Image: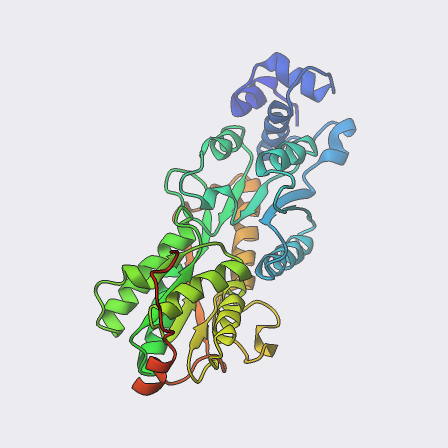
Length: 353
């Protein structure tokens, strides 16, 4: 096939002179522009020049948060495995606190000529973040898929867990065992998953526990063990007999907070996690939690990205995956009135005084 510079230039949104510089390996072209031209070559079905073939799209960027939360290594493993079956290799970029930022990872991936990027709980999940970084990639013709954190202002495929349904199911499970004073230990409010989980919690409390006003039962903190512990302390002060948590790490913190007060889990306090991270079944007690469909979501993200790479525009509606409530031993029937009263510590002064 004869390479037509005008076709490539039109698709990449650059001049024919710029296309020529990229094809001939000349300097003076930004990494973003270079990637836009290479992507245009792939989409239009042109063969890359021999000198550029080693940069050919055998690489897919995979950006995830820190790997200390076991759910993210689970996503990484599932995505990497799915890509390998299609002959692609994932370039894993994890964002440890104080480490390389997402924008820097994006530039590094573009320089390596990746064919696309999958973002798992990236900055897109922060409703206050600037969408410009993603718009720029899309304008360059680079396929991307966003996992968990739907943004209707980003014209890209989204794959998400149904967070609202997850928390509603958790509340329904606890309410069915007699709990009415149910708390929510959740992460920062600006995150889309946080907002959806909170929405599901409110809906579940209204529907299953008859509670319309639950603001005092919601504590926003960090998605960490320490965050869960701090939130649980406040919720136990509110007389909660059960606590829903934003992830399994927070659930570990909630269990720690209960035990520090001499409370037994689940006899006096029930705890529900979120994610069904590896090893949660082996905790003491084994953790009742919400299982994300990690494998199905990862396969969908990979299939959607490869569809975009092939030049076929993927459906833009959010792919929403139904979670599963996994009941184990960290939840039980609500304690009696006497037990619940005994679990509330006497307070001689307002909290924080």
